[in-house]
Structures are given as structure tokens and as C-alpha cells.
Image (cartoon, rainbow, N blue to C red; front, side, top):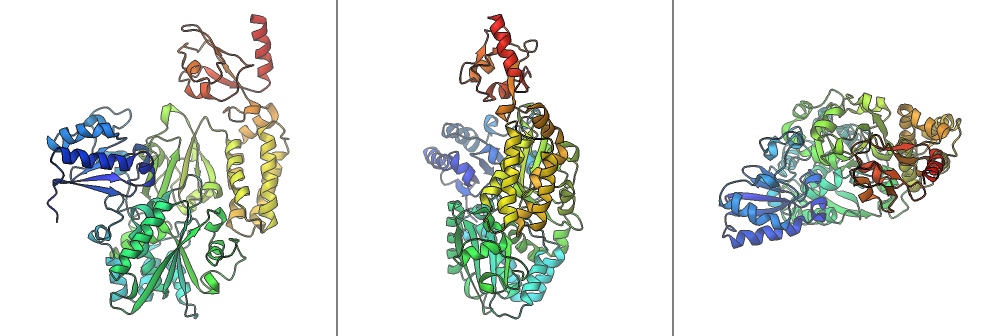
Length: 613
């Protein structure tokens, strides 16, 4: 143990680095030296802390004092008052919205204390670039237990009986997959970690790879032993340079310590891991396309069967697990299958990591027990919506998922319950949308993404999604026809039934769920030429309800083209001939006086303004 009086943990994930976390670290070290405290407090750069909305983040241990949104100029006061005099500086600490009073420690903040950490157990607690930190928190003990004291069959059985299902989207039982692969007679097998993660708004796997790279390696080592594979690949997109760098460093450290390579733990078992950097194609998140990419070929899915556990990489039996799945494995081996099943439900055991983002106060990475209601995630852990916006929907499962409306917010987060809503748990993207969101535009956004990312191999996906997108584009500009809604539904089902891989089979989900739950918005776009949310600019007119206008001039300040007419204490108006429909006034008005109307209203308002003039 060190003689340090405390540890100062600074978030070093991509998000906090982007907001100046490393500069805060350097300035903190300088300030500690200036005050003669450098030998008393250890500054540690961790991986992602999880609370991305609060970065740069500093957590002071052992007290657990949580400082957020730090600037370099804040550090002298923190060092002087807190570290030197023992008086935490409340002005820099997180305060629960709408709950004045005692400033909470980290463990008292709802964002943290309602989570249960399994895959993320080391987040914010270790230096990801030091293998010693990982080992100090039971790192590689599970691998040692498996390789030296368990048969391959026992390892697969423990993981199978834990109920751990793939966290990458498919939800297949992890241990059962290992069992199938081990049963293949071919002597050469491979294990692959899927760290591609291409969903918009998703950053679960990236954060684990950055914050705890050794847990990925240990999970792969245990899986490799279970199926008797001696070579593994981590497939990670090149857009994740920090994850790639920390994974490679972790591999080098594990090799140096004999935890990878030859004769691991003196058991005669050899295992090597290679990092393969993908070029960012979304379709390469699909298992067979990913394996084609590793082989140096174009990443395109192939028909199944045979399954990858029979003929995968180079037509050899192969197991592919995603990052989060592998991160759960070491703790299952250490604590047993019954321990893992104490959380979650009968069919959806354990925990799930989500990237909570969108119109929510507490944007970040969370891990919650399966079975928790969506409402609790969004309004307790997530802290509700900012600026008192009204909840409209939450998108689950990324482009492959769907939009869940408010009346279904009490749905438990399980694989089977979320599917009933038309969405999927998927890899864990969770995007919250408020009343400023247009659901037609949302469906169009996700379909644009999947259309662009289609590999083009099968016509249903290549052509069908393009036809659907063109119909949505017409609806968004006022060219839609009433029969388009039924056509979109029929075409969606055809694409789902006939596409080759999961990309095409799930691409229509955002369209189907928005039609199912927000049919009125499609009808308004088509029948009334009206986008109530003001997103589809061809179908909206912004105007000010003069009876509600408080003449606060906030809308006038944000208008980029000086289209707001009116002085202080005089109700304002919008000059329709100048208005570019940027929505700035609509979004900033806290009195609800800026309204939306159909596109046809604009001409009437222009005439009225001419008469008044």
C-alpha cells in the first residue's frame, strides 16, 4: 500500500479528454506541487467515469467527493480548501436538480447510486494503462481459476447457467454458443471480440475498452480456453484511437507478465490476441461480415447456416462475443452462475450497459439490472429532461431498434419485454426525445443511416430501404400521399422477411414504431402539410402568440436574421419574409408563446403584416 493520504481520480475517457480533462490533470499536479501536497495525494487518470454530461470530472477518495465541469482556474480553490484544509468546495460539486440542500457525495448522486456495476465495476477506479491496478481489483483471478481448476466443459456450463445473453444485440446465450463451438471436431478455432459499435449515440463498448481493457482480454482468455482456441481477434473501428492504444498496451503488459502467450499459468495453454482495426462500416458489426473483413475481403454478410460456430473465420469454428458480454465473464467465473442470476429476470439475467443520451439531463454511460423500468432510467438515473421539456419517445437499439412512447415507459428492460414494444435492447443505445422532435424526421434519419450503410448485396435491403427513404423524404416536404402509410408498412414487412442479414431485417423498425405510436404526425404531414415540431421546414410556419408573449426579447437575441419585430414590453412578431425557420426562437421561448402552424399559414401572416404596415 502507498502512503498517499488520498487518490484524485480524473476521468480520462474520450468525452472528458475532449472537454479538457488532461489539462485539468496537469494543472492539478502543478497546484499540488505548489502547495507541497504532491507526496500526499496521487493523481490518477482513469477511463470513462460514466457521467459524461459532467466532465471534466474529479473524484476525491476516500471521501468520494465528486467535482464536475471543472476548469483550470477552479483548481487552486479546491486544493487550498479541500485538500489542504479539509473543506470540500460545494460550488464545484454536483447538485441534484430541484432538490436544494446537502450537496451529495458521489455515492449519493442518483445517477450513480441507482446503478449496479458488473461489466463496469472498474470504471473510474483504476488507471487503465497499468495492469497492476487491474490485478489489485481481482484482475486475472477468474482466468487463473478457469485454466488451473476447471475443465473446458465446466467453464462453458457456468457461463451458460448464468443466463448471460449476448449484449451486442442478438441476445443468444453466451455459454451455449461456446458449448456448440467446443463440440466442433475441427482442431483450429478462433474467438473474436466485436468492438465495432456503429450505432449512432452508442459508446458502451468504446468506454469499456478505454476504461478497463484488461477485462476484455481476460474475458477472451476464458472464452478461448472454453472452446480451445489459441488465437483471438479484437475487431475495433479505427475511429476509436484511444481504445486501440489502451488495448494494445494491455496486450503488451499481459504478454510480459505471462498472462497471454505461451504456457499461461503453467498449464500448457497458449493464447494470442491480435487487434484488427475496421474502417467504420456499420454492416461489419454483423458477425459474418466482420469475419470477412478480418480475412481482408469486403465486409459483406453471407447466408447462414452454416453458423459461425461451425464455419466462421477462414471457415473454421469461431465464437464472436461483443465487448460487454466478455466483460461480464470474469465475475461470473469468480462468483458463480447463481450470483449473476440474483439480478435481472428469469430470461434476462444480470445487468445491461446503456449509453443514455439525447434530451436528458444526465447524459452518460449507465449499468442497470435487467428488468428495471424505462421510466426509472430516464427520470431518476437520467434526471429527467432539460429545460422542462416534455417527454415524447425513447429510441432503443439504434437504427435496428424502435421508438417507445410515453405510455409504455413502465416497460421492464428485458430482451423479451422490449421486443413487444417494437424496439430491441440491441447493443444498448438509448436516445431520449422530447416534444421538439418530429417522429417522421426521426424515422427518416435512421433510415438514411441504414440505407447508406447497406452493403448492397441483397436487393430487399439495397433497393427496399431506398424506396422507403424516398417516400419519407416526400412526406417531409409535403409530397406524401395518404396511401404512403400503408405502403410503408407493407414494404417494411417484405424487407424484414427477405433481407439477408440483421441490418436489412431490422432497418424498418424505426419506421414501423413511429407509424404505430405516432400515426397522427404522419397524417398531419400528409393531410395538413404541417410538422407540429417544426423540424420539417417545408411544412411549418413559426409565429408568436402575442397574448402569451412576455416581450423578454430572448427570441430576438437568438434570431440570426433579425426576423423578430418588437421592443421591450411590447409583444413581438416574426417577419415571415425574413424568417429562415431555424427554430431558435421556438426552442428558447420558455413561455410557449412561439408557436408552429402549417406552411399555408405563412402567406396569411405575410398579408396581415402588409395590411398593418
